Image (cartoon, rainbow, N blue to C red; front, side, top):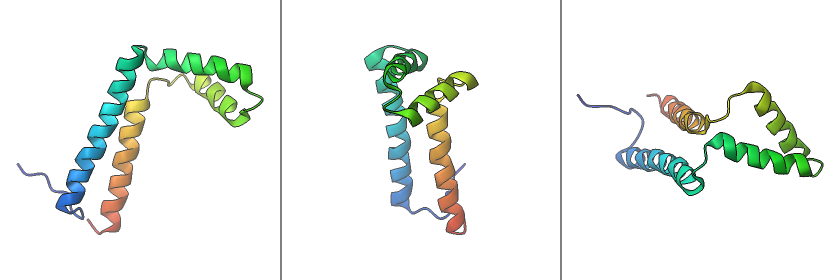
Length: 96
């Protein structure tokens, strides 16, 4: 079975592999360096934002909203979905 990616050149397909591998590598490195789940890192950042929220009101509001919706630990899926969404738009623009 051969996968087709209409509208992408061979070089762009290789670039796509590099982008996807980079995303995976980045998330894996974050996990290995800190050896803490994303929720723990988010909690540490949240503590600092609470201390200095007056300097960063938009970020403080974002952290508060994230705590309410309870969907932390979604960075891999969120990033992958955005990469694939962008790819889909590019392919559609090129008529694929």
